[in-house]
Image 1 (tube, helix red, strand yellow):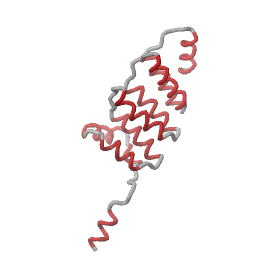
Image 2 (cartoon, helix red, strand yellow):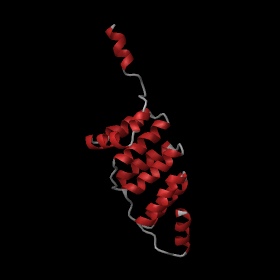
Image 3 (cartoon, rainbow, N blue to C red):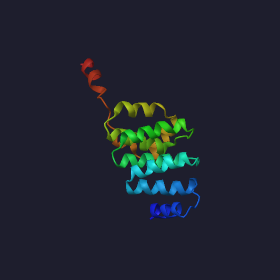
Length: 147
């Protein structure tokens, strides 16, 4: 419904803004339309509409839900270029996307960029760490050398 309303607004030449794009991209997240979310982000950039953390997070989440970990990571990386800060929810979506694509090295790269406060918030709110599997078993070599 939100995407249909957005389409009607565009056809009627109603000026789009951060709020209307945010609603449309959030609808893409909920409906698994990652490709439409990316198109909307491009339209925002072309129309010089200011982006936000929530908008990028919704687009990253849409990519994550559809197994598009590469697109999710590219969006996450683009946030810094666009001077948009990431919050704990953004980090969680990017981590889940890359983890589901078995990209442990990228997960570690994302985690290394997180502040302590974001780690704490992510652990408390999203449960992202329950799904994470270490890319390698770090305990086995240590335990073998102890015996």
